[in-house]
Length: 343
Ligand SMILES: *Cc1c(COP(=O)(O)O)cnc(C)c1O
Image (cartoon, rainbow, N blue to C red; front, side, top):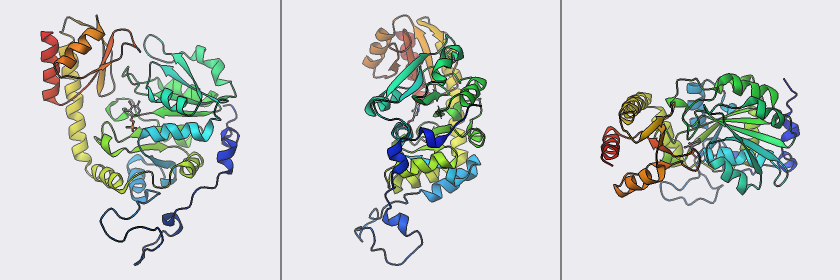
C-alpha cells in the first residue's frame, strides 16, 4: 500500500476552516423555551431541522453496521459528489478522474468547481483498464477517482479486485457511487471503509428507496473524512420533512423488499421481451433498475417513443446507438414493449 495521508490532500483553506456553529449545534438538549435561533414561534415547520441528522444516522448505523460518525447525510448524492471537489480539489490546479461512459454529474460538478475531470474509457465489457489507469494513480495532482458501480448508464458492476487495486495504489480519495447497489447481486463495499482510509461510499434514497423527491444521499467513510464533510456542508442541508420521510421508509423494510422484488422481476420480463424485438440488436447485462440496449437507429426510436408519450433516455452520445430504459411499473413496461413492437 502506498502512503495515504488525508492531511496532505485536503485543501489548505478547508483545513483552516472553522465550521459555522448553529444554534442547534450549540445547545443539543431538550428545553422548554427556544429563543436561540430567531425562529417564528408559530406553525409546524417553524423550527430548524437537526443539523446532524442524529436519528437518521442512528437508524442507518444499525442497518449498515457502521458507526454514526462514519455517516454523512447530504442533499442528494449530488451534494456528496460536490463536497468531494470542494474539500479536496484546488480549483484550476487539482484534477479528478472517472471513467466513460459513466454518470454525467461528475462532469458537471467538476466543471462548477473548475476542476479538470480526466475520463478513462472503459473496456468493451465496461470494466476498468488498469494498465491505462496506472500512470494516473501516481499523479500527485489527481485527488479524486469516481467509480460508479453498478455503472450508469451501462448497468454492470465494476470488478471488486480492480476497485481494491485502485484503493491500495492511489493516494487520493476513491468514491464508489453505489446509487444502484440495492438492485445488484454484488455486495456493497461499505464494510471496506474500516480497511481503506481513502474510501468513500456514496448511496442514495433516490432509486431503490423511492425517495428521489426528498433529496437524501449518504456518504460512508472513516470518521476523519466524515468530519471534513460535516465541516463544509451547509448547516441545515437536509430538511426535517426529508429526514422524517426517509426514516419512515427505513422503518418499513418489508415494503421496500416487496417493491424492489417487483422491479427485479419486471427487469427480467422486460429483458426477455426486448430480446424478441427485431430492432433491438443487443441488450447489455444489468445489475441496476435500468437496461442499456443497442438498436439500429437510437435517435429515431427515441423520438418515435416521445411521440407516443413514452420517454426513455437516448444515450447515443455515450454509447453508439444505445438507449437506456428504466424499469417502471408492470403497466408502464407493458406500454413500452407494446409500443416498441408496433413501431
Ligand atoms: C441517480 C443517481 C444518483 C442519485 O443522485 P441523487 O442526487 O441522490 O438523487 C447518484 N449516482 C448515480 C450514478 C445515479 O445514477
